[in-house]
Amino acid sequence: MTDARLFAPAVARNRDPIAAALRDMLPASGLVLEIASGSGEHALHLAREFPTLDFQPSDPSAEALASIEAWRAAEGPTNLRAPIRLDVREDAPFPPAAAVLCINMIHIAPWAATLGLLRHAAAALPSGAALILYGPYLRAGVETAPGNLAFDADLRARNPEWGIRALEDVAAAAAPDFTLERVVEMPANNLTVLFRRG
Image (cartoon, rainbow, N blue to C red; front, side):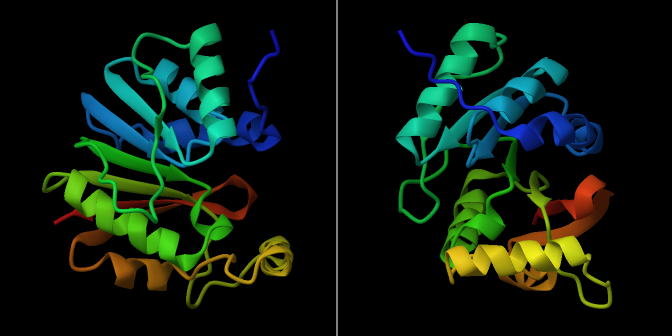
């Protein structure tokens, strides 16, 4: 039987800084819905780090869902749920959640995916709940790191609909459902961005 687990090299580098940033952003209990869980390694790590929370990984890709389930079956704690298929561009609603987390999706997806994420998260979250985004962003008045400029050019060469988004554009699309509450600088020129449901 082949092992369906996928390995994303960046996860080993950024999972601990992400967990540290999330410590005062996530609720004390409830369901955290992760969108675009990819390999499933982040969901696995965060479920271990936050044992009082339930983590619901999701992804539109069959390969990713198989990887998430393989990680869960091999090493997953009891608070890591079986993955579900969710595509933010489709009409299927998100399950109700205490928080929504999305790591490294917005720049590797069409803008329509960001709009779908915001729309579905607004419907799934109660007032005051957190929508947390992680990844690279452009910011007005903040010099963009050369590595992010090169990464953006590479993304757009691979798919013209991809690219590093301006944080101001994401915040404008999130309003009036969400308010941008906090931006945390992360290693490797990434940000953890906290939006609060109105």
